[in-house]
Length: 407
Image (cartoon, rainbow, N blue to C red; front, side, top):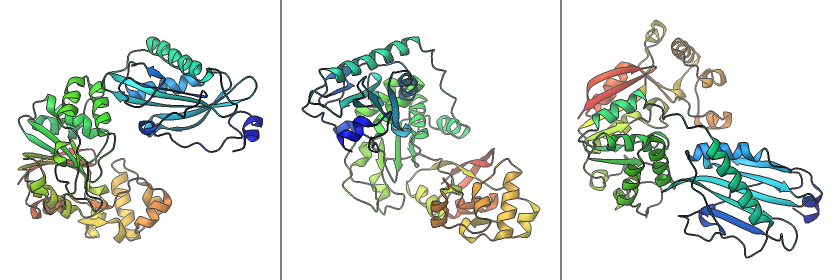
């Protein structure tokens, strides 16, 4: 981007495409044209300490987006909701462009944010960036003071409620990586009397501790979340993919590991209860192999939730038990579509691919989490039995079953 194009452009025009800022490693340039506000707990350099704000980071981010719409000569360039980060351009009365980037985060004290302002043109901004940062933070604090109290957290799902109830007195392993649900279940299970909780998935998010702290704030379990983070400091992952359970990684409350690791049992802490909410229907792999891996953890009891296709005469006539999306023909796809729609489930993949589905086609079509497996109730029971699990109880939860089994 040339200085002339940035100057002559109006609104966001004349600016290059924005990209996210990595605030954890950001070092503001030695220039009078920039100012960074950061949470008090941020160890890096900062010119202004950002305040602690009421509400979750998601709520603070929504307030910030709404607030910025009212600032004069300010246009939003981009937003990355999954990071709670957004970027704006604010032009001066003389049309000079300044860039503002903000990211809302969870901290040990509550919710806060990074707010970074920098001028693109001119030798000095005479403190304009710092004044802007202080003006934005002051407006956000005033808006937060007027904000209505947040609604109470939603009750746990039926699967989560069953898992939490069963966790009392148990050493629990959560064997899937839902970044929203697993931190909540971890804290609720500990509050319900679980002896210990360990999360393990093929990928451990970099912001795992922040997710736990955020869940603690949302659920009113901040003390529990802080205790877990303090007691279970994250260990480094010395092994690149293919992923195996990492030596020493069990110290982290969320560890990176694979159910296929040959030394899985040696790497895991003692496990009584295994929880799996990954849904076998959406598994891009082999469900029986996963069930065997869950047994290899050493857990004596398993609770899982998996979508199950209800039996119909049309499916029975086609010999339905368990089909992979890659082996469907038109007749099988039509019968499955009808059976699922009768229960209020419409899968976009059937409209796009009225037959077999490949991974390449799913990616090209932008299908998010398609069903790869269509599993009947008898097939699920057979797979569990072959993996060494005996069903104790099953409960219908919409199109899914919540199954409790023992080894």
